[in-house]
Length: 356
Ligand SMILES: NC(=O)c1ccc[n+]([C@@H]2O[C@H](COP(=O)([O-])OP(=O)(O)OC[C@H]3O[C@@H](n4cnc5c(N)ncnc54)[C@H](O)[C@@H]3O)[C@@H](O)[C@H]2O)c1
Ligand SMILES: [Zn+2]
Image (cartoon, rainbow, N blue to C red; front, top):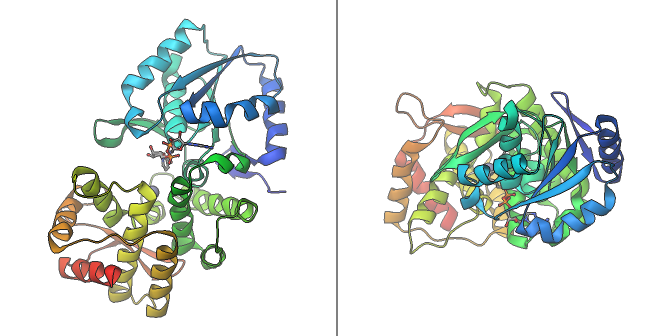
C-alpha cells in the first residue's frame, strides 16, 4: 500500500485506501452540496468509475468544461462560477475536481475565489497532474497566450491519486507526464532516475510506486521552499530551453506542435549538455540522459534559423533577472545548481549534440 504524503497539511492519498479516506472526509464534513468539475474526457472515462466508488449523503452536481489548455481561461471560470451560483452553492459546498491539470488548476481557482473561498478536493486523472500539479497549491488560469498569469496559492482539503485512471490516458499524454518524473530523478534523486530509466515500457503496475516516489520528490522540494526563492527553482530544470521550444513550435506553422513534456524532454537533453560543459556533469551520464529521453520521444530537427529563434525567446523566461537568462544546471544526477549562465554559442552546440 502506498503511504499518504503530507503536503503542508494537505494529505495526498492513494488508490483504495484513498477512497476510504475520501468517503470518511465526506461523511465528517457533511457538505451542503458537492460540485464535481470534469472535462468531456474525464466525464466520459473517469466519472462513472469515480461515482461508483464514493459514498455520500450530499447531493452531487456535475459541471463539465471544455477539454484543453485553451479553455483554462477566465471565460470558463465565469461559466463555472455562474453554474455554482445557479445551483445553490454556498460556503458549505465542496468543489471536487476530477481531471487533468487544466481541471485541477481551474477548479481550484474557482473554488478559492467563489464566495471568497470554499473547500475543494483534487482527483488528478492525467500522469502530469498526478506527479506535477498535485502538490504545491498552485491554482489559476491563463491570460490569452500567457500561461498561469492569474491565480492564487491555496491548498485543497485533500488529494486522491487513483492510478487506475491512467488506463484511458492517451500514450502521448502519458509520455508527457513521464518527462516530469524523469526530471524529478535528475534534479533530486539518482535512485528515482535509475528506476525510471530502466522501465522499458509504461506498465501501470510498475508505475504506482514510481508515481508515489515522484510526488514525494516534488513535495520535498516545494515544502522546503514555499516562497520559490531557491530550491524550488530546480523544478525548472529543462524548462528554460524547453519552454522556448514549446512556444516556438506553437507559433510556427511549419513546426509540429509539441506537448509540454515533449518540449521539456528536448530541453532536458540540451540543458544536460550545458551542465556537462559548464558544471562538470559526467559525460557518460550525459549520453545516458539523451538515450533515455530518445527512447521515449522521437528526435525533432532544428535548423540554424530555428535555433536562433528559440534563443531569442529565452528573454521571456520568468526566471530571468536583471536581463540575464538563468539556467538550472546539474553537477551530477541529484545535484542541481540554480542561477547559472550559458553563452549562446554553447546553446547552439547543445542543439548539435541533441541532433547528432
Ligand atoms: N498546479 C501546478 O502546480 C501545475 C503543475 C504542472 C502543470 N500544471 C498545469 O496542468 C496543465 C497540464 O495538465 P494536463 O497535461 O493534465 O492537461 P489536461 O488537463 O489538458 O489533460 C490532458 C488531456 O488528457 C485528458 N485526460 C485527462 N485525464 C484523462 C484520463 N484519465 N483518460 C483520458 N483522457 C484524460 C484531458 O481531457 C485532456 O484532453 C497545464 O495547464 C499546466 O499549467 C499545473
Ligand atoms: Zn513542466
